[in-house]
Image 1 (cartoon, helix red, strand yellow):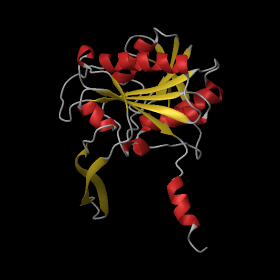
Image 2 (image 1 turned 90 degrees about the horizontal axis):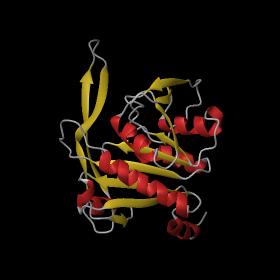
Image 3 (image 1 turned 90 degrees about the vertical axis):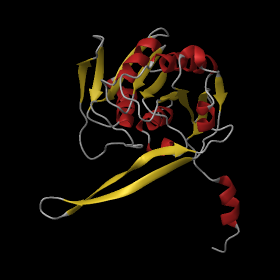
Length: 254
């Protein structure tokens, strides 16, 4: 098995290294990730400039590839031939914060897995529900172990066409996890605020700030599962068609 590992936090992120090391127990692992942080970048494909890829050395001494493009660029470049050996699976993460609800449209972690599916390869996104005000070194080992178990299952069972898995892991020790739960997307509540300022020349500029987003606690959802101590596995599909709305629109006079 040949697994491509990527992320949106940058090639030197500790979560990526922890997951890459764990996935090596399943087969060959190639790391190809952005050379900087692309958090909340969404599904980017760089078309207006050339992309570069170079070899870098990770903290454990292993070699990886880094690109000046986005997470989805990393996957696209790998599948299009920068990585010569056929790739069987793409695993993106480990993101230090959960990706739930509407986060999936913003998340570079999730959209890298989407890019894999577009390229005809199974994709998995792994995120960790770390404490909001946590300071110190995060423990990625339980989430890395979850990533290995999910990857092993996907390769054994396969995924439906056009489907990726969005996996969120509670910040617990591995023996404290209550199990795995198949979930639906929950609701994310964003608390964004506009911070308007002026530069030294008096011209306005803006920051989008505010408090950390929260989720709606509801049974059967991604947020509900992780708050109850379960690993949330949400199957996402690339077909975003609102089929019920089609029936409504067909009744309009066009």
